[in-house]
Length: 311
Image (tube, rainbow, N blue to C red; front, side, top):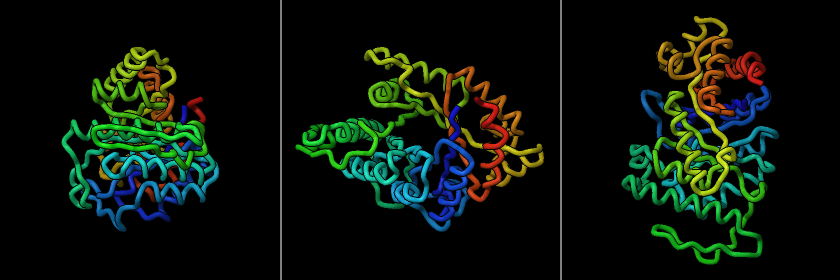
């Protein structure tokens, strides 16, 4: 079972704070450090000192870490054109020595689009653009050096692109797709995903969606086992019930709700909870949503007392 730290910097974090958490993640032995791709806070957080760009952040972390994998849950297709995005991600992959994983989603948060002058198309168009971006970005990366890539879609057209630079990983960084759509999402995952992620859902919902992805893969002749299954869950892990309650309160969450819907409890309780998830859904990876970026102690606690029991 891979454990990864997943952060939400739009709620309030500087690059230096993210670097501190990323280094703690690496030192504690985790598999990866991930971040969201948002430009505006959500809820009651103050969001100070302001947003940090996901791929600029990951470029910095690529040079200041050495082992952990780095990525997004998930890059918003509405924020960037696919060609320049393919260049940015390939460059960060080179800068990291081949440690990037690429999550891409359709975009959804209307307030951040309005706040920063970004266009949020209607849902169908947004998903159509997302599908084209997946095809373009993976196509650019996988085009052999010396050849060119062309694409003619409804929203994007590329003519004889050299598909440069190439990522360090060949033929491409792992691609992460996720979401609860019952038809188009599983179909896109079957075509493009190395990993399918479900954030903040219950195990029954996850199991049903993983089954749809498997069926979509089989329908195009792909082995479903090629697509890794993962979930993202909010954490509040403590050595005692009092510490669990304190950690839930620190991020503005109800302890009972987090125990029911996230990963809250003592290390033994969380080990049992992850075991239940694994048995019901077949997941082999969990993204631990750390909302309090000052809480490095929790990172170290999970690494010391939860991770060793998941082998």
